[in-house]
Amino acid sequence: MTESERSGRDLYRIEGLKVHFAIRGGLLDTILRRQTGVVRAVDGIDLTLRRGEVLALVGESGSGKTTTGRVIVKLTRQTAGRLTFDGQHVSTLWGTSALREYRRRVQLIFQDPYETLNPKHTVHDFVMEPLVVNGIGSASERERRVMEALEAAGLRPAADFAFRYPHELSGGQRQRVVIAGALVMNPELIVADEPVSMLDVSIRTELLRLMLDLRAERGLTYLFITHDLSLAWVIADRIAVMYLGKIMEIGPAERVIRSPHNPYTQALVSVAPSPDPPTPGERARRTILVGETPDAAHVPTGCRFHPRCPYAFDRCRVEEPPLFDIGDGQQAACWLVEGGRDLPVVQVRTTEQGTVVPGSAAPAGAAT
Image (cartoon, rainbow, N blue to C red):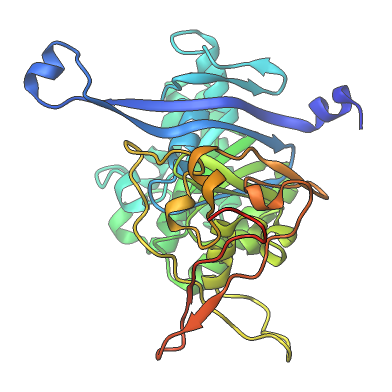
């Protein structure tokens, strides 16, 4: 594939994105604008969203995944990095007339429909608001688009839901209203931040199916942000795994799940519920990581995962690995896979409860 063909296939490209927040110790520091430290929420990532795909951004709390999504929808300013949407440079849209058009094309689905919806506003009010704010269409055109968006989100017939208040809806119905609020703008890209995490399992399945149906019908592209790798496996074409502000692994969903090449991804996969039962020769194991995740104000030197990694050796503690090409579109940031090597099987010990805890393992010939 040529560079021009690849560029035409890409809808959104992030290059070298950093989002750092200053830490100020007290009132005097705030007044004098002095900082006592820096939170490196996102610390230099490259990410590409292809047209029509679902890219899942997976990680624990504090990984930087939500901050990345907020930068894309222009709710948070980046410290550094280049953003390109549909071939146009969009890093510096703040305060320009182009920002309104950008926000029409890029929409956000929030995690919590209970906080997103104003209890004093009807469903109709909520879905209508972005059209009014952005001055889109005549009154009759807006009315038509609101009802069409409600129908598309599965609230049928729309007339039965349009003038209800949030307290008259179930949790799943509220999230459908939030989805309708995004759809009414006819976006091309939707950032979905933990969109089903607060819903019952049965409702989650319905909402995920709806999102995939909408992708097929409208040609949507999704950045699906989640802490749940099993959800990512179900909905995503590709998965990117974040840890402490960095991409640790990225690739086709099936490859990342079936053959993880970063120790952090390996640990996440080991605790994710699998839609497929273990084969007769497989033994279900659960890897428990040792220690707490460092905070983004005190990022370890070298590989930021090394304090919790069962494979860590001297190089990991002083030098940060880049993303190495594994093949078939998969990349992983780990010195152990440099040169196309496979990640070894971790040494384990089984507890009385049957869980498996990483032991201390280093690659053959590595200094320890």
